[in-house]
Amino acid sequence: MLNVEHLTKTYKTGDKALSDVSFTVEKGQVVGLIGPSGAGKSSLIRCVNRLVEPTSGAIKLNGTDLVGLGAGDLRRARRRIGMIFQEYALVERLTVMENVLSGRLGYVSFWQSFSRRYPGTDIERAYRLLDRVGLIDHADKRADALSGGQRQRVGIARALSQEPELLLVDEPTASLDPKTSRQIMRLLIEICQERDLPAIVNIHDVPLAQQFMQRIIGLRAGQVVFDGTPDQLTEDVLTTIYGAEDWTAMRQGAQEDAQAERDAAREMARLGA
Image (cartoon, rainbow, N blue to C red; front, side, top):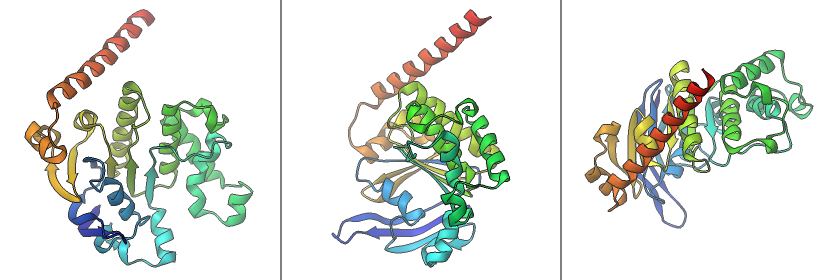
């Protein structure tokens, strides 16, 4: 469980990115974080794993306040937090398997990581994860030979190799086409349910968030202005979060994309029958 309590972040420039933000994420719950650019979404995610230092407040992961940890304890705590990045953050010249195993760097010695000598249990886990994300046949490929969707799947497997207690996901579909975006979101939701894993997903695509998220938190100017279920995210609420927009047209486009994907899948199944 993650508890964020009265979290505030003010940068040295005086800009307040977050103001008195509080919420709880239960085990197995996937929370979508939405809001306009500059709303504080990325700052919030980075405060949780302390890539950005909070100005005040508490961030408790299963009872441990991450804000109060020293350097050594923070390194150990970060092993429990998996991070999935928008731009994948893979080492392009390494293989898919080596990138997944890099999620174990916090658990092995310097010389083991330098020589890429990981324990057999880590290697077995990596193979299982690659199988789960559908990349078992790509284990020996270099990361730079993969498509965007495949790279994001490697990022998911790498984060899971940490055996995390929390997933932080920063705009996982921003660089992907609509069909691949839905596949990645479906995979993330399924994995979190299988592992009873809480997750926060910073997502810019509102219809996609409404389709897949169990709960949505809306930020505006660093403050929580909405916290509820997707069906409560009315046009009035969306206008409060983002300002005026043609939300009906946006939803219509997303529904048409999803229907086209379903039609294509049915046609492929018919041809293969």
